[in-house]
Amino acid sequence: MRASVRCALRCCGVALLWAAAASAHAQNIPATNVPDAITRKTGLHLEPMSHASRLYAENCQGCHGPEGVSVTEIPTLAGRIGYFARTPEGRSYLVQVPNVALNPNSDQDIAELMNWLLNTYSRAQLPPDFQPYSTAEVAVLRTARIDVATQRRRIVEQLLLLRQIPSADVLANAHASLY
Amino acid sequence: MKPICTNRFDRLIETLSRTAAQRVSRRSFLSNCGTWLVAASALPLLPVARQAQASDDPHRSKAAGKYASDFANHAQTSDPTKCNYWRYCSSDGYLCACCGGGPSTCPAGTSPSPTSWVGSCINPDDGKTYLIAYRDCCGQDSCGRCACLGQEGDMPSYRPQVNNDIVWCFGASSMVYHCSSAGLVGLVE
Figure 1: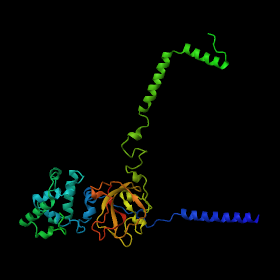
Figure 2 (figure 1 turned 180 degrees about the vertical axis):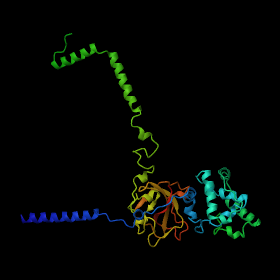
Figure 3 (figure 1 turned 30 degrees about the horizontal axis):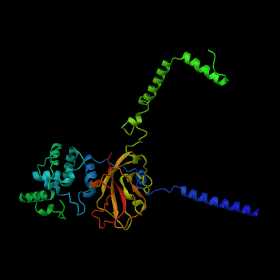
Figure 4 (figure 1 turned 180 degrees about the horizontal axis):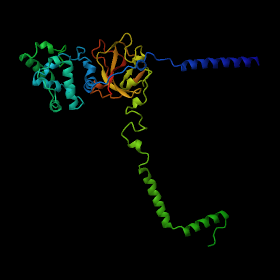
């Protein structure tokens, strides 16, 4: 009789412990450091991105950086792509670079992206009479497949000859394999 | 006509079938049978409750869920250590939030890769689409905790800019992959 009472008490104790552990597990620890919890609490309001900046973010920003400057392995866009727009060949080259020409977006989107890109990151280098890219122009330019490194070298030499760039250094890349 | 059968039960059946044979036309039986056959086979062709299958608009279809993205239909916004946290819709790898970092921060001892790829996820809190930068943390051995595989917008490796199978440590001091983070880039719509 005594043994059975002890056994029952022990069982009760185990059950209590188990219940306590279960309730501790079920307790929701408030996730105060979760960004969304903070956002909800502070009522942070984000403005939607423009279509062009969205195109840049989705297609270019990952490597070229949100400011158009990235690591030495990736060519810098900011403060220099505008130079290319100073000759017709250079203007074509900007659209014929493989990652622009072969981009899955439409000609209209590419035209919008290029105009936004040049005006946002390299307005000071654009020629004074710069004409924005049109959809039709991009459509034609994108069909060409160029030898990128050779074409780039030729354009830089030409820009230098026409005194459109102060020196070849402004368009130089850290690695010879880059274009 | 007097029934032939002697057994009571047999007689009953015989009477019933003889009566039926005398009163019911076999032609009408055949035509009725044909009508039912045609009706039964034609029933599924009727435009009844087929909206769910026919609808290509995900917002109208209940079976497809609220959003076009299957991930977003099961996503949550409170626990970044779970695979179904809304920002991980394209994340492939170990969650930095489980490895000593946060959903968009690297654990101590690793450094964020200067390059990343950008995808988009739907936040179920407001139903809006946000751009997310998938940035790997590099410099330590694989974390090994919370392996997740989100595949929204993931493209084959011949489009490496938007592929999550490759190690995104380009430009980092070390190409050794530790974990994947998902930082917010901006609101799309």
